Length: 187
Image (cartoon, rainbow, N blue to C red; front, top):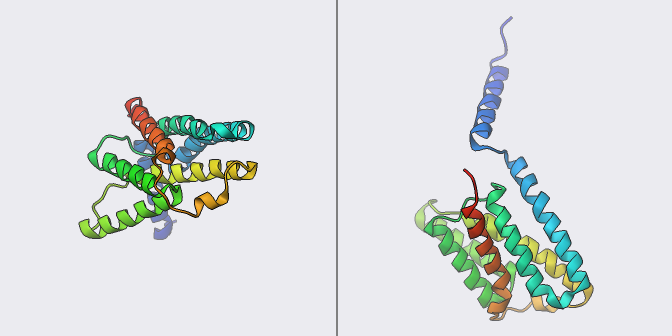
C-alpha cells in the first residue's frame, strides 16, 4: 500500500530536525529549561535577600547577575563571548545603561541600534548580545519590582532618564560573568 507523499515528507522533515538537534546538542526548549532552572533559582534567592536587606540591592543584584552571566553560555542559551562584535555590543549596552540609567530604555536603544545596523549591513550583524540584553533587562525588572514592592525604590525612578553609571554596575557584572562563563564552556 503506497504512503501519502505529504506524510512521507513530514516524516523526513522530523528526521532532519532530529539530526539537527543531535548535532547542535540541545533543543531550544532544553536550553531554556537549563538556563531558567538555575537562573530563576538564583533570582528567587536574590529576591528573598532583597526583601530582607533592600539597602544592599545594588551589590546583591551585582552578585546574582554575575552568576547568571556565568551560567548564560554554559546553559548553551547564548553564544560564547569571543568575537569583537559581542564586545562592541556589550560596551554599547553599558554606555547606554549608564547614560540613561534605565535598563528598559537601554534595551530599547540597543534595539534601535541593531535595526540601524541591520539596514546598513543588509542583514549581516552579530546578535549574540541580544539574548544577553534581554535576560539582563528581564531579571533587572524583576529585582527592581521587588524593591518597589518593598517600598525601598520609587517607581518614578524608572520614569526619568539620567546619567548614572553606578546603576550600570550590575550590567557590567553580568558581562564579566558572561566572559568568565565563556572560558569554562565545553563545546
